[in-house]
Image (cartoon, rainbow, N blue to C red; front, side, top):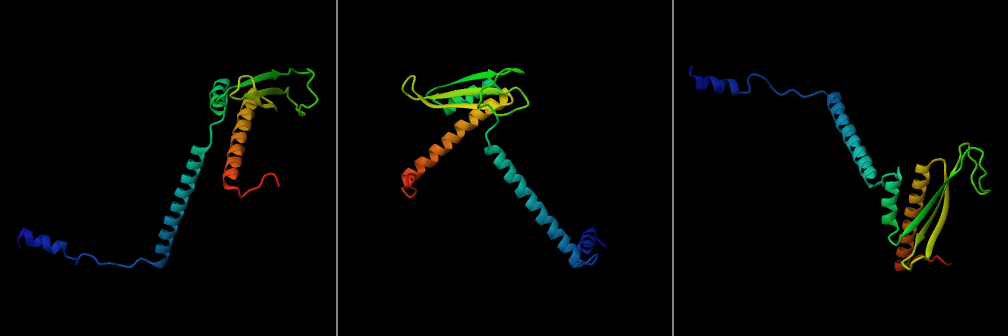
Length: 159
């Protein structure tokens, strides 16, 4: 027999046939594919939200950069650290640790005109800086909502 004929004989479907898989195997494979697709969707959602979430402020340099972007007309902050046993203002929240007070101001285009003035309390300097940045981001979000409501005229804020 020639080698060409032997190759044809080997390539024919005589060596094996097609056997149907049992139903439970098909079900298990379909379930595994579905679970993997759900896992990929969960991971993609998590990564997208993580990417959109602003990074936390952990030091003064990050606070300077972020607040510089959030307050283009200028801002000022003053930190006050209270030691153990030091008298704290009456409006300070109760705390087991010495509190950190941060007073901050946002300025307007007009030099020296204060638009926003706030005081925040925190257990650490990093937390106080983060709270200041969060306050400003909240203000910007509320300003965007008000602008959108003014444009739509569907929402009445002064009713």
